[in-house]
Image (tube, rainbow, N blue to C red):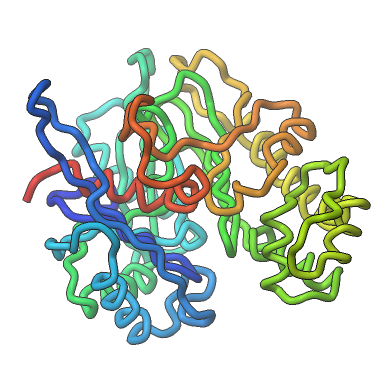
Length: 386
């Protein structure tokens, strides 16, 4: 068994995705007035990766990736990194997660039992995966059984990420599936009286995470919906470059625009006026956004029909949707989804468990959303001292 759920040492977070690397390290400093530890962002970096180095979470070019990580370590903003220890993300699309019920027993016995039960729920043999498990603590202990979370990731994926990290001169403190880092960042105090649906709208894929009580209950990932796909569709429909399509997407989003600024001087001004007049971006993106809505409804329906027996979760139906990831910055997206789903939809705050409302985070909300996984990894890396 390999552990994905309990780091031992202090380090920094490294979020590895198909097209980027994100580094974040926190530091703690005692306040002279309150004598309490305050957390600060010590180091950070967002580095783009070339296409083909990683594809759908699978590393295709280990040597090039390890070199890219080395370069990123030297180019961090803020203070230079002084630790080799790192908490690294594992791709959501390559992981398997399941909650099983076991008779009440000691935690260590439950961990062993969960390992042998895992084969009944994972579509691979135990010889092909690393498995970790964790007993879920209910908000109120009214259960007559134990709910145990099982996480499994193919050995070839974990071993590949481990090799790359070591070749980059780092020591992997822990490897963690992205959804756990995301929850740690955006769910206040990592507990909720009601089920939440968190959507990580990334550059190359979209992940859906349902969380309630003190644990993740369900995850799903699709590469048929992503921020880059929306840009590609705009590019093809308007016959413009990908770069220009990305600029227009960021500028106008899917919010209805009533007025055209005729004096505005940007790139292809005539084209932009037509886009704004006819709300072309919203029209073009309607089909993929409808697909996104359908996927969300599927997740909610699945949870409603398979929800576990955690009696302490008072509100059993999903009423809130939290958006994270760079794609969450699409203008008008929360309102669009809220109207389609008849639910409360809003962009998450990845700093909710780090900074109080009185302290401004070091990044804008737009940047912070793309750093959500890195923030969660860095928070985990801060837990214990070397």
